Length: 636
Image (cartoon, rainbow, N blue to C red; front, side, top):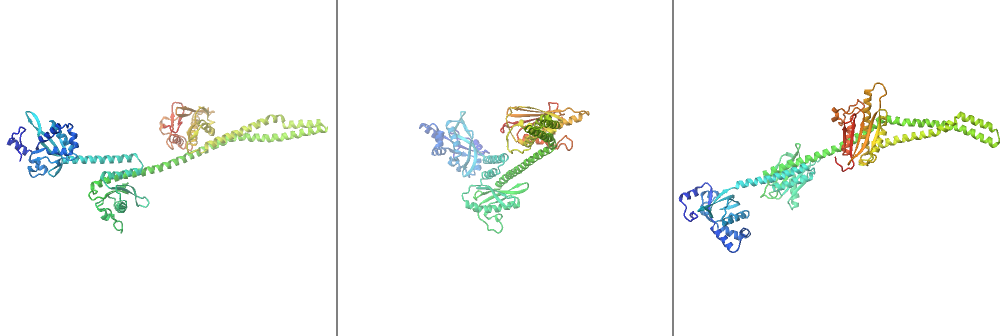
């Protein structure tokens, strides 16, 4: 046995030796003088970058390691590495102590000793001590010679950190797993593409547990059979994969039936993989699998499977827990996708209902306007009829006058009694009031044409208003739409209010749905007229009430068009402003309002046109403000 020596080569005392050997921590003494000699030789040969040289030349590194001599070890070292005696460890440092992962740090140690620098700590991963593998840290201490550290011979304190390193590795692996799970969770929350999400889940199963293959089977809602949705496989033997898939279907069916996860270390011989009386279909011998149910709302809707074809890397219970976690995420993704589909269908149905409601409201409006429109048409039709009857009578009278004229002409041509014929003509003209007819017939014809034009104007306005229009945006002349709607609704407002237009004639065309927009204008004008009528009837004193006023203004405001429809009615009470757009809310008497008008108007302006509908309470009456974007790209 080599004796422990001081730096000055004098033996240490028995007390010091006892303290060294009985120390409760593992320590040994190393002699670095051989390494210092090697470094001096390399320097003499002109090698200056010793670190790079030792890193690149493995033989030179092994030579340097071999020149480090273990002088002595204490009993704690023997217990730590499981050696029988000191002789097993004393001597040249074994090369297997340093592996490829650790040797860069060990070169740093050699350089520090040669340069006379302190070595605080060295980590060795997977170091071999007399056949014992461990992760450890080495702490170095040097003897003092005249108060100066001498690193040619050092005492090394060894700490076994295998458990710590393994714990850190486990934490690192768990952190990586958590990051993958979080990434899958983020994808579920940010995407509704079910195929992409499920593919990411099977990819994650392969990545997290090192599986050879992973797949998701989903139950068909109608046939209740399992169908493959997505898979991830490292296998290149497609035939074996197809054959094994039949077995996987078998154990997946068992999982669906029993509603719990299953793990098998050899699926080829697992009875749960057999279906009915079918013979067992063989996978690669030793193929292990983990299968977890995908459960949504308490019902199994599919399975997530991971398998390993190698018996040296079986699926473990920890792997099954991860598969179950991923299966839970798959269930969330499937529920989200199905919920989105249900919402999409409901939204489509809601849009259809809204369209039907809008059309029903339009028909209701047309129905309520029908009597007024009939009256509007009746007036010009009446004087067209009266003038027509007058013209018929005038034509008869003109016929009598024409007969008397013909008789006068005949008397003149034949030399007859022209005086008598002339007296007869005068008498007929006086009876027919011929001068009156000459004056009134042109006026009657003019009035008839005006009446026909008035009827045609009303019919055109009604046709334009009632036309369903295009289902897509078209360029609309808002000023024309406002005037047309005012004509159609004239019977609603002409007795209670006058309409005054202040329209910007340079207003550009606006992308809009003409039919729904006309309906909104009608709702606003009729509401204004009814508000004015209600106010005058409440404050009336028996005398003829004064007519109110409805102002319709259009202006351009940057990339928007603004329409303001105001009335001189009582306005909207502040207490109900937050409810006026609610469906079925109305302040009108029963039978006079359904509460759908402003709700429909808001839906048309805000949802269909991406516009704005607001209320301005600055005036004494009510003012509704409609804002529409001039471009479909303008977003509120």
